Length: 188
Image 1 (cartoon, rainbow, N blue to C red):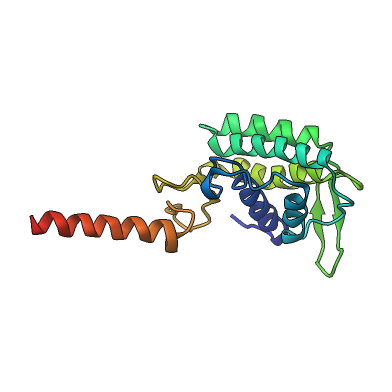
Image 2: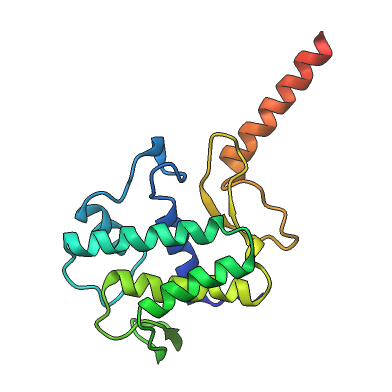
């Protein structure tokens, strides 16, 4: 599956957005998108263009679409994921247009000019997830399998085998624990 630069950026943004939700992989189950300054940091970190001054209204709208994206990652099948994505993209009033701003080559923005940050995220991130459903790759939208971690991630491995949000933390920790348990059992 070919993933363009802008689609990859949207995937990174939606995964990070989902992971800000309490009990959805955020640190200590805390909502890390609780203040307007948190949203400003998120927008800056993801280089989201065309966003003006952010307000409490923007924060609440982004938190609402975040919940919808959490549901997409939890969807049991492609039909449910597609229904959720369709709702998100339609509500955002998508207006696909080609653009080549800020030194980037031509790419597609799915949000209307002047769209709110919530509509921007719903449209661009929704379309990025839609590409996975269309390609029959919805199962790549996953949650970490570590028992104490539920962080979202997109499995971009060639053979769809990724199980953990980060193999150096969650994956390594579980492998070490399994090794120690085997050693303890062998020692009797």
